[in-house]
Image 1 (tube, one colour):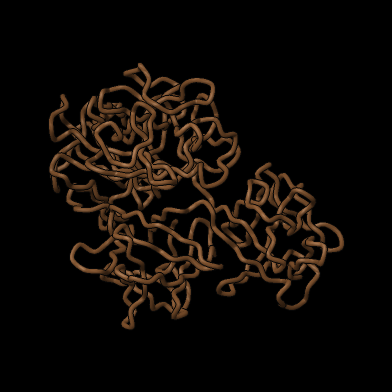
Image 2 (tube, rainbow, N blue to C red):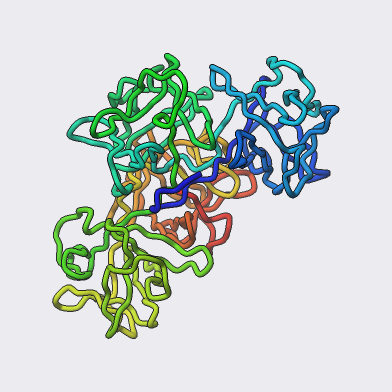
Length: 488
């Protein structure tokens, strides 16, 4: 999937659900495939790869092996490099279901449980698959034709495809999955309807079927028409087309955390005059995108103009770097309600008396500490190594190994965050270490953005949230590991 130079487009990962409501599953033992999964976990996640010169697609399992069929319809998933037997065509159905047709043999893939084959000459019930996206549902939406991002226009009460860069909370889109269809939710918890209006309630005209074309997404409404940007501001609503063309195609791009910094002088760090803590308001000029290097785990800060903070002579900073280099990277030290930044020269970043930032300090004091506030996640969806976080069906605890997710509200509180459930109750960690969702009073949690696309969440007890083996969310991990990192 293409990018617009701002962020990486998300790989299209999904689960495939058959007519018996079971997921296509890739087993590690013998590289066998079946349709027995009752929920979407690692073994049920597939990655779509598009042949750039044709409509052919390849399906890659979580083991890095490719789905294939021979001339007799025998299905396997052993190939490490895709060959002719791995070539499939996606045949989209009017209701959004997929049929997978072997390109070399023209037969259709389907079946149930252990009995999968690719030998059907026509598409029947057992050859139909529903797609369930596996990527994190909070993203930025890019129009392929306009090369502009979706943005909530609170003045016009519309979702407009007119933003050059996905900046601030208004650019956050959350995909809501229900009954094999998707809805687009804005940052203020409203749904996009097919007439372009934003509404609080989920209705038939806020549900869309996802279709794929050339590796891009199209959203088909309940009347068979597709979303597209219209007019000068690119108002997003259903047009007249019943087949997706370029105007109806979209990419989903990952949404990096965007933050503001408040220095010891109680003012916000801004790029209005060099990089200084000299502003009282939060605007785009005071908002910075955190981009964490996958290898070094160091952090870079991008401005709304697309440039990075960079260290210059005498410990000063400019926002002039156009690409990531050593002098644009910082180590973050997490200090509960405050953070400290250490620049590439090994010095701490401090706020000078005139508000300017400089990396000149050898030790930590008040002037070297900042409040970091996340501004583009007012609503929160968390996914751990085993699945999404959602309410337990029969108790006040949380499951963290589900293929469906609940949406929570995130409230900022002086360097900490409070998490509110849909019932207006708050998360807290019980004395036994369970994370519970029925608190009458808010409890503070501390967010540490320690890895690319992942956050560690520390409770008031000083321990990190983690998923236990039974899939229950606990607040009892002493240090950060894979079980205590969350996509957000």
